[in-house]
Length: 214
Image (cartoon, rainbow, N blue to C red; front, side, top):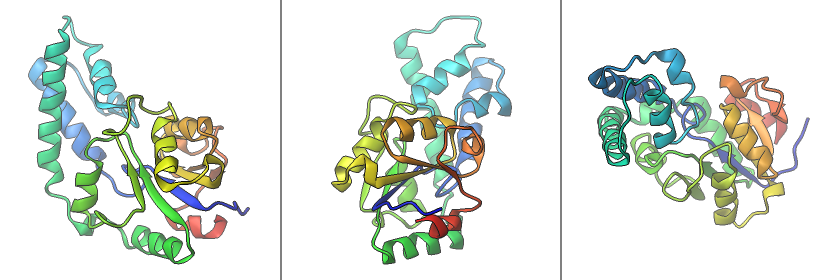
């Protein structure tokens, strides 16, 4: 199957690189300090979800209520821990498959963008050597609604100067697939709970499989 698209928008975590372990460690540290049970099953519910929405999921198991100010402080604490962990990332965390596929897509004339809910997107891209690579970046600093809301992908398309119908989205989260479809874009699932969720337009067998369908 071939999709005639002009731009490709990528989710960051779980697609371009993998920082799930750092998110888990940072949320676990916060939950442990607050005496709230947290494990990897709960962590899976946080995929593609904003920081504050993730915090609300974690606090579901708390036996007390917290003020908005306390919640803001918790989110900041988690993010500070997460950013310290991100500092260990290097260009070695970008696989040759991803690097070579992105380069070939660029050679074929596609516009390439990141569409991520993370406010740390630019920092992560710098750490893995892609700080100046993409034609546009839309992230958590640009939006007010997280996936499955289509805002981040529509923002990417706008920054690229492209119509949504001319964009394909690569996602590993079902919420991201739903956001892509809501944006009027072609939704390509790569691993995670996006794969086989029933809402995707195509399941990628690997990152390099992009070269076979675009």
